[in-house]
Structures are given as structure tokens and as C-alpha cells.
Amino acid sequence: MSLFDNPTTEVANRSGRSQPTVSKFFNEVTIRQKSWMSCYEACLELVEEQEAKLKKLYEKSNKLISKDESAIKKEQ
Image (cartoon, helix red, strand yellow):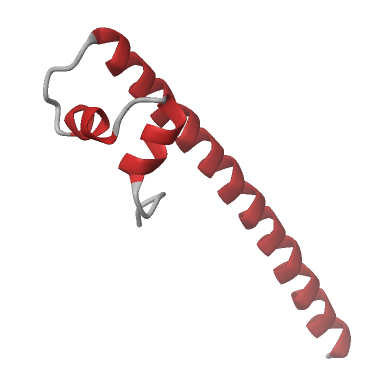
């Protein structure tokens, strides 16, 4: 499962770099250090945000499942 439908666009938008530069970053083609750093930082930020969203979803799911299980136990 990938975190984004189009990671190149996401990183380009976040980093302010062009899509060709971000493509070079992902393909490990040499780019300027400043561009590499901004792409790398954008990647880390995006992954961190997605992980936080995923954690919230898991927590919400666990709450709902535990509520459903307790309701079933009460019925029995």
C-alpha cells in the first residue's frame, strides 16, 4: 500500500521544487544539495502526517470495535 496516489506531485507541492527535480530525487539522480534537502524534508513531513492520520483511524476503529463487542456481550 502506498501512502499517496502521486507522491511526486505531493513532494513537489510541499517542497516547492519542480516535478522533474522531484522525479530525479526519487530516481536517485544527482540534484543540487538544497533541492535534495527540501525534497527529503518534504518526504519526511508527508510520511509523518500520514502516519498520524493512520494512527487516529486505528484508534477510532479500535474504539468502535470495542463498543460493538461490549454491546454483543451485553445482549448475550
